[in-house]
Length: 215
Image 1 (tube, rainbow, N blue to C red):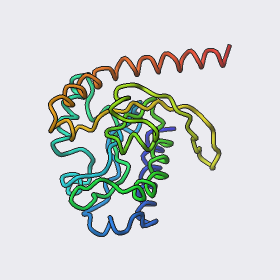
Image 2 (spheres, rainbow, N blue to C red):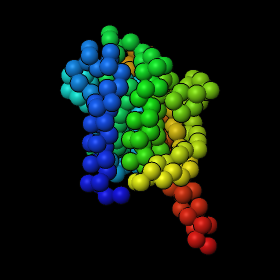
Image 3 (cartoon, rainbow, N blue to C red):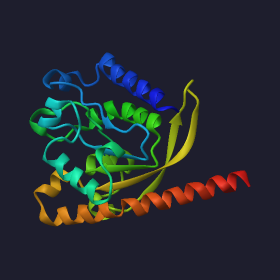
């Protein structure tokens, strides 16, 4: 799929969220929808929980203090925001930055799945327990952070055709939590440092699977 086609599909998806009036109570008290930002041709998608105050004002995810820390960690592994795509499960700021509610996450989940279907990343990095639990509902982030997990995933293609594939999820602590907890901060930096090696392993396995399929 071309970059232009992906961008058009994501723009259409953003318009659909507005047209479908997803979570109208949240929308009514938010400044704007915070859909997502970054490279649509990336191998890496980061998924947070919900926008905060700065994100609500600017219309982009992770632009506050947590975003600054995220940018620093990306720089540490030779990446920038231009190399990745980043979004949240819930795309309106909850009042007073409270945790997103189960029904809010459920309402936005189909649109998040559609975003991933368009981008088709090699790895999805979840930031925080709310994001992780959308993909790995039975796990505790304190026990599995930094450990990649492969799950089955249904892709919806142009025309509505569905195929099953696998998706690698890497659960990490949320940068906001690490800002207030020195121990978590170093843990997150260490987990982040493993991303290039994990991505290389995924690419190697994908190549081997492709070779087996054509052998």
